[in-house]
Length: 207
Image 1 (cartoon, rainbow, N blue to C red):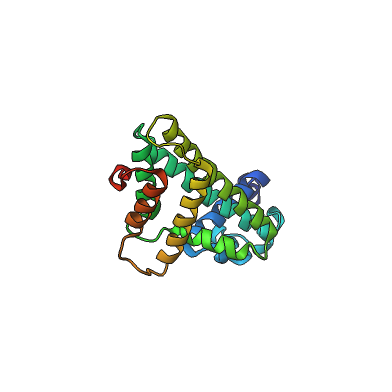
Image 2 (image 1 turned 120 degrees about the horizontal axis):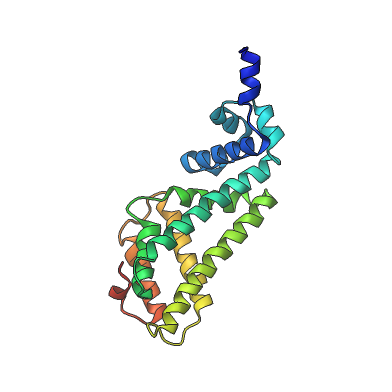
């Protein structure tokens, strides 16, 4: 069998190539940041010419937006899965804090921070950033409301507390990228603030 025949048989479909390009963009975003997702970088990771990436992608703005969305949506899914090991809403929120902060700055935090910054010049990215922020807020509000329904929290505004908590997580997470003010720990600081908003003891919010 000739080499040309083998190459034709091994040629990837447009859908397979788009999936490969999208995966490469996500890997670059996690490893090096969202601003590293360039035409040349994606092409180099896939092992093809930049022109082939340009042919299959719907523009770099869209590719960056999709990479952002895939990375942060995967993070939210992982956090929610980690929380489901228990029924207690207070404990689940404690697991949330331990998971999103951890011991080291999260690679996904850099993707978020750059998403906010780059979104000022990339409207497709800005749309995706807003959508993913809404997804996080809805998930947090649902969990807080679930705790209220279970009697773990009093009469509270779940939506407002979810936005407040998200702002704390985002702010302290961004500061953690440059390791500013390691003491008190970001997790404990957030735990105390959230406990005050929910009207519970801080120790109740331990995973």
